[in-house]
Image 1: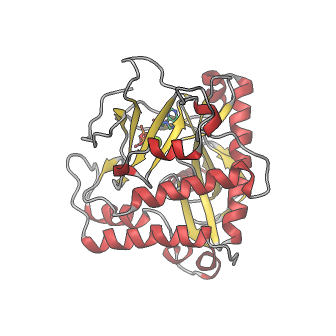
Image 2 (image 1 turned 90 degrees about the horizontal axis):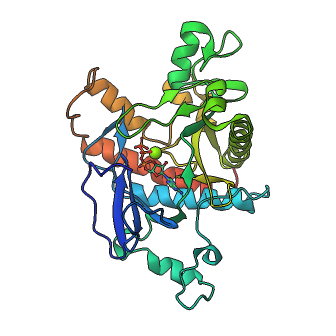
Amino acid sequence: MTASPTPSTELTGWRHVYSGKVRDLYVPAGTPEGAEPERMLVVASDRVSAFDHVLSPGIPGKGELLTTLSLWWFDQLAGADGGRGIPNHLTASHTLGLGADGEANTADDLESLIPDAVVGRAMVVKSLDMLPIECVVRGYLTGSGWAEYQAGGTVCGIPLPAGLRNGDRLPEPIYTPAYKAPMGEHDENISYERTVELVGAERAAELRDLSLEIYTRASRTAEAHGVILADTKFEFGLDENGVLTLADEVLTSDSSRYWDAAAWASGTTEDERMASFDKQIVRNWLAANWAPPREGEPPALPADIVERTAARYRELLELLTSSAAR
Ligand code: ATP
Ligand code: MG
């Protein structure tokens, strides 16, 4: 892991090892330099990024909302939605082995590992051997997929029927993997065949099938709450037994595009149909206020863009986790 480009909080009991654009990673303070830790602390900040730049100011409450959403989805996918349990990187007390006395740890032990300063926006996870693939699933046509489709009728090389509009539902969800570039480089769309070269045929198929399965389950859950899951990205790693394990954040509005289902069905303009619950507000504002090639320092986000984005994040969490299905 590379050194952090971003200043991060000192946390008792943990040593900072890495910061992505949005999250900060820590290992237990006692971990020898260069050794593989058993677990890690993933802290979601309020930072927001668009076009690969971290913007200023952050979105108040975003780290907590996204962590809450991730934890909720991990729970759904562990079986709360009625489906089979998908292994994930959250630590369970019995796998931690923290107790000096060798006794099983309790949930309280877990809580106590999360320092006060980051409670609510941090997760203790198993440190996995991460696969260098971003497993993208798209159920709807938009974004870079729409641009490619307009140019040649394909998305990531996958041919699609003619006559689709921006925001249309695809005949079936498609798996469009990307190579997870090292820090500071752009992720790059790759073919399925390339994923076979990277991780082997069996693992590549497993990644694809699991990604499609999770997308299908999650979009069914989202739709029951009036929300469309247009597309999303998963990351997986291997645990100490080589088990493929769902990692990173999952189905958050940073890793997914969510739209209001009612607006999608009744809207006439693109903006109405794709009324987004993610940082689209920020992306749109930046696109209009910062001309390509978008290098150097991005312009500061205006207060109303920050507030509207925060409200949109809150709205999504409320919709999805409310017990009343729509
Ligand atoms: P970007 O800002 O483009 O997302 P990034 O992916 O490097 O860049 P973050 O997503 O903020 O940055 O950082 C989280 C990092 O932690 C990622 O590199 C992710 O692959 C890694 N990660 C997530 N879960 C685990 C895990 N259980 N074990 C090891 N690494 C993990
Ligand atoms: Mg990431």
